[in-house]
Image (cartoon, rainbow over all chains, first blue to last red; front, side, top):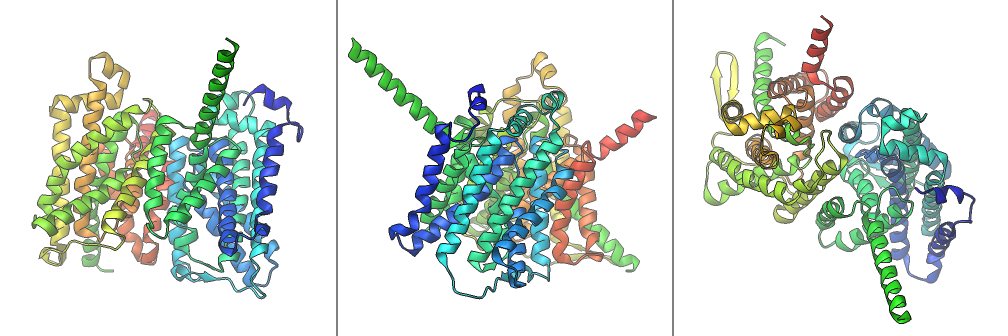
Length: 328
Length: 297
């Protein structure tokens, strides 16, 4: 982050905010263009992914704490919302409760595991995630491995689902942009770069990590809840699966961690490519993402956003060259 | 539970510990020399299992011989992986996220490559040995477990010998203690790292082949064992072979005896919870606890 960003914190003084708002407004108008129910469904899924991806980036990108355990929050949110809806709670209230439960779980997980640094934290989150999955698979209350049905009365309204996911994704991106440009965002960045140094300049790393984990888990839980209401059927091997954690981790890594736009780009790439490939080759997209991840780690840690930046710089260089050439 | 039941459980736990130790040794050497948490370990365990299965089904090679043959094959594969990918990651004295994510990407590739080739159905290797057992007094030894245990312990013995009696072994131990001092006394760091990576992956392949004799497997096979390996090496203090052996024993005992108090379905959660517990409570491993006590005295 540069000092210039700090001075431009007022809303809309930065063209990026306007660009982002226009981008989301365009997507909000999509269902009215007559693109069909399949397209609406695809966009709904993508918005759910965007929410989870942006949420993961708050912790993994801004604070540098790579977690393999976001399926815990996604699954908890899904199950909480499903159970609340089945009890007759209003769906939107259920989403909030789902977010609250997931956020509370984040504290229970974060308090012990944030004592670990970097890769050890990452490994510990794999352990937590797998343990929670096994427990959810064996829990009688929620139907165990055979899954859980969401019985909501009333007609199925795709547009309502679409806009719920849309608003949630927009809120997640808004929160992400706000954190990025806040003093809190700077302290997260400091933790990312050097935890001891951050502590020396007066940042409490544990508190900061817990707060951002809390926010990320809440958003992911709500995304899980929104998905559960839409899918009407959830099971532990789906929402709690290791592959769900992997998906939530891969999207921001592909898009470019530590940026606001990166996780959104990553989620689009992931959602669309998965959609195209999953029917013909159920596992092929993960093979592709594995290769992509290796390439990104070895050559461009900023992901797709990094490539876009390089392309932009190259184009600008070309234009400058042609400008100087025409001067001659 | 009478004494015979207890003995039977204890024996099966010890037999399990042998194979657990063999599968985590590969992770320990790689961690020790390069400080890389090898998440791709799971992928190589899985490939080892399929390697042995293919040899058995296509060529009729005895799975035990297959597991031995897996070692040179995976040794070369490991050196290749190091040469192509791992050496491009900046060297560090602490495990880095870049190396973790690189190995994770490799695991994803291997796993889904497995799905492409073998599909997602569960496979198993059945030999005449699979169902036979040996009775000594009240204690039952399943033959296949005994054989696998023997192979695992032998392989660890050979590695232990090589580490103490060859130049390669001495350089490995030197680099585990201090990379810079090792470089100063003229150890070819990169060459040793490449060989170590080969040995680590070779062990993963062989251990995968041995595990395939005991369990059914699919391309997702290695994940549970990856976490178990990690529990074991964390319990063992991450860089010590004896620590890993003790860690393997603890995990095997806990996993075996926990079924007396918990439903069997919850058993996999034990390893995963133990992992978190070990990381948080015992960052220096069991040896670390003793070392600390020693310092106080």
